Each structure stands twice: as structure tokens, then as C-alpha cells.
Amino acid sequence: MRFPTFAPGTYRWKRLVTSGLCDPSVPWSQLPDEIRDVLLHARDLPLEDPLPGYPDHGRFDGIIPRLQDSYLRRMPSRLTTAERTGLDAVASHSTCPDCAGARLNTAARNSLINGRSIAD
Image (cartoon, rainbow, N blue to C red; front, side, top):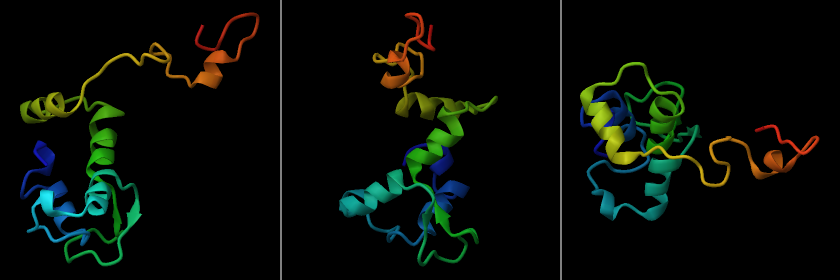
């Protein structure tokens, strides 16, 4: 993971390597697809056997949920240059082509009162 908050030695890196989900010495390309998926996408996963140093709550969030929660759902007021560069490399912002930025699902957009939707 080449994002600054996951760099070797950082808090988030330590959480990954002490999760007990895989052997940290195994290269990413050699990890089974199922393990890579968990490391990337898990949300609030109870860990069966975390290594010493893992937080006592024993629950794991993958890389993508961590980035979403920390940087995309609510942008921190201050970002380091490295964080800004890292975000620019892994995320882009654009208007949703389906809802045109209304942030409403199809059913909500199609529910009309007097010909107007909640987005109107």
C-alpha cells in the first residue's frame, strides 16, 4: 500500500501486519485472492487470532474502508502534502452520471409530488 498513512512503521501499517490475517512477509502478488479482498474491503471484521500489539477490540477494517472513512466521506480540515498526493493518486471526484449529484437513489428520484422530486 503506497499511501502515506499505511507506510511501514505507521499506526495503520502496524494494524495490517498485526491483524493475523496473513503473513506480512508474503508479497501481495502471492497472497490468495480471498485474503487480498479481506485486506482491501473488510469492514468491522472480528479477528480470530490477532498478533500482539493489535488493539484489544480485535476488529479489522480493510484499506478501502479506512481511506473512505478517513479521507473521502469527510475530508479532514488539514492534509499533509504526502496525504494530498496520495489521495490524488488513488481517488478522483466526479459528479455521478446517474443522479447528477443529487445523492439520491433511483426510487427517491422517481417519486414525484406535483411533478417534482425531492431533488427538485
